Length: 346
Image 1 (spheres, rainbow, N blue to C red):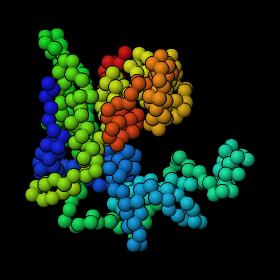
Image 2: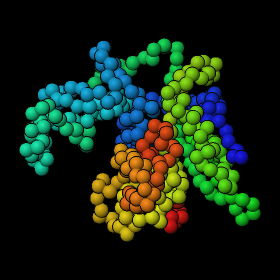
Image 3: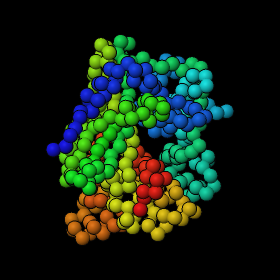
Image 4: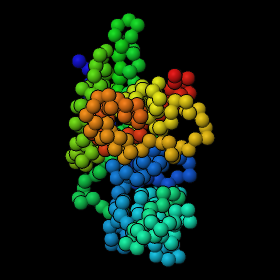
């Protein structure tokens, strides 16, 4: 039997600890020149699970993901990617993704097919760079009840089957959780690493993580909790999964790192991993693509053909159980820097 604690109890105890709560940040993503905290990053800013998802402008409510018109010498169409807070002047600003019509496309992307599509109103999204718009009339929309506080928690779980006592008794693995709403100086303290599970020898990860999955699915929708004697609305989501190579691949549903395509962030073959000139965007793994590949593997009735597809894609037959939560499996499972720098890879 695995030793386990409830994530609900951990969250309640952290939020009801005044010394921890006062150190935590809850709010919109911050546009900072020095990226030192999680709320300075893209994941926090563009996810409604963590950042501010709507803003009132001249009496109108705008939400992240909305298509909006903006002025850049002339009226143009764009998509609202994120609502940010400028670190220097504490003013709200909008991150806009440009939407291009056919006449705005670079020459290499123009052609008869796209021109014909444009006649029916088809437009194209420009990936980067994004446009930042600042305005002094932005207002933060208040929650439905002004007495309800909203806390959005950015959780990081660390999983390592580190094999404690493996030379004396049986090996022991563990899962810890961190609250990335804390600044880096607080996150690095040992007292702010909270034990979620200890996994005994022979324990099945999918079995002992199920209670955590069930609780987190509730928190993704929001949960009413009492914090310091006051009712609050708590939203918590899995933001980052930190693990060394074997467990990191498991969390992404990717084959082990000694496979031909054993990297959980790219599709590069084993022979080309040391090729520094490869096209990173072209070889990166993307959630929507691996979703389709998992479906293709699942729908293949023949076992031998399934294995062949697994080898071709570098994937397991089934996605990770963590994919039942709202997450991007590759973006939110980064390579563990410590094990890379400590020469523990390979």
